[in-house]
Length: 256
Image 1 (cartoon, helix red, strand yellow):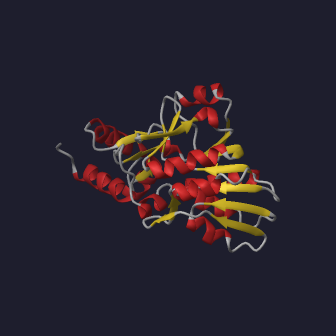
Image 2: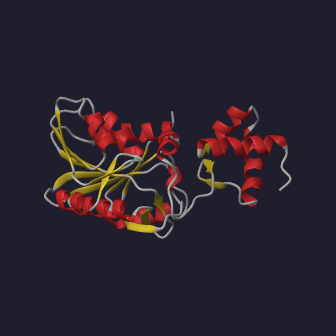
């Protein structure tokens, strides 16, 4: 395509960050929201960008997730808002399972002042964070450590988690598709997440707005298995109807 320098700069910015809001683009590029929206639309029409509610990202692969360092920086502000909203709802003196993901790691940070928690996790980053809370017992699942993000996966992990029944599973996913399916990229990770869902009395899903309509290859479950969704913006159509049909409570951690 024949892009002008401003559009090339916009594209490079999104590629560097992975996901960014329209407001952030306007601020970083020093242009109006109208200009950003017009440029984003043109780049999306060319297949160079993918739009989602409130922002834009690089087109996603259905077979491979983006790298951990990039995921950790994507929509970090939104993830913090989600994590605070989750922590506000988690009571003291309860049992939890936290799975793999940068959003669950943000949640762990917000649980550092809770007392009487017993937390099971297959995420070494979560375990490291919560070990800083002396009023929290952390139980780490066995299995194979995935070097790129310190996740623990495999059949040993599944067998370990099956020993427990917890009050709340706090899970993240890579994708929520328009048919109501929850999806991810790694079959071993998916099998562990499915076991976590089965071993919880309530399942809370923490997913920022970029996860809606993002394609991923492997089905983890459906919205009907979720009790509460925590996100950072209003879900786009058709998700409000899907959430209502599945009787999922939706908690939106909006920006102030």
